[in-house]
Image 1 (cartoon, rainbow, N blue to C red):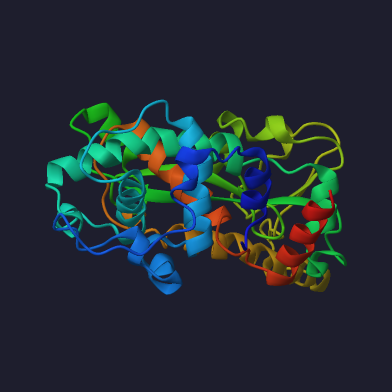
Image 2 (image 1 turned 180 degrees about the vertical axis):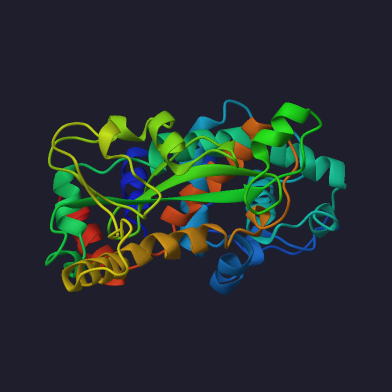
Length: 331
C-alpha cells in the first residue's frame, strides 16, 4: 500500500467478518447486466477508473464503512456502489453512467447522492489534516532546505465552473474573471504536496485575500511557520505573530527588480511549482473540469472528496513517501 494516510487508518480500523468480505477481492463472473465489476478489475484498471491503485481502493472502502450508519439498498453490492461513485468523480461520467453497472441513471444518481456526504466527512476528518511541525520537518524535501527550511505550507486559490444561479445576486457573486460562473477555494499543501487544508467554496468574484481571511486557514498557523504564496496574497497583516510570508518581489513603480529580488523570486517559483502540480492533480478528477450543477454544499463535498483522494495517490516527491511510511511503521 503506497499511502501513509491509509497505513494509519488501517491500524485504527477493526476489520470484522462483514468487512473482510471485500478484501482480498475474489474475481466473479459478470451478472445482472453489470458491465463493470470492482472484483474483476486489475491495478491499471483501478487507476484509470478511480485514480487509486487496487490496494488503496479496497482499503479505503474498509475504513469508510464505519462512517456509514446503514447501507444504501440497491441490487449493487457496496463495493460496486463505491466504484460507481469514484468513477463519477474521476471520469466525469453522466449519460452512460448507470448503464455500466446495469442500473438506471436515476439509481446511479441516488447512489452518488448517498455516498457523497459520507465520503466528504471522512476526507475532512481523517485525510485532509494539518500535519504537526515534527512531521513537516521529517518530510520536507531537500529542495526547501537552502532558502525555505521552515516552510510549513504553500497556498493558492483555484476555481471550479458551476451553472449560473437563478438568483441575480448569487449570479453576480459567482461571475469571475473567466467571464463564467465559478466557485473559488483556497488550497493548501505541505512542501511535499500533501493536501492539508481545503477551504469552503466562495463566489468566484471573491479575492484571494478575502478567502484566506474568512476560510479559517490562519487558525492553523503557529509562531515559526512560513507560508509560500503568490503575489495576490498580501495577507501579512492578518497572520498571527511569528508567522512569516514569502511572496515574489514587486517592482513598486520601479522599471525592474534588483538582482537579489530576481534571484529570490526565482527560488520561490522553483518550490511554489508544487502547488500548481497538486491543483493540476485535483483537476484530474474530470467532474471538476465540467460545469457542475447542484447546491453549494454538494459541490463543496465533491471538492473535498477529490482533494482527499489526491492524498491517497502517490505523493509528488516519491522519495519522501518511502521515508514517511518507514517512520510510521516504526512508530
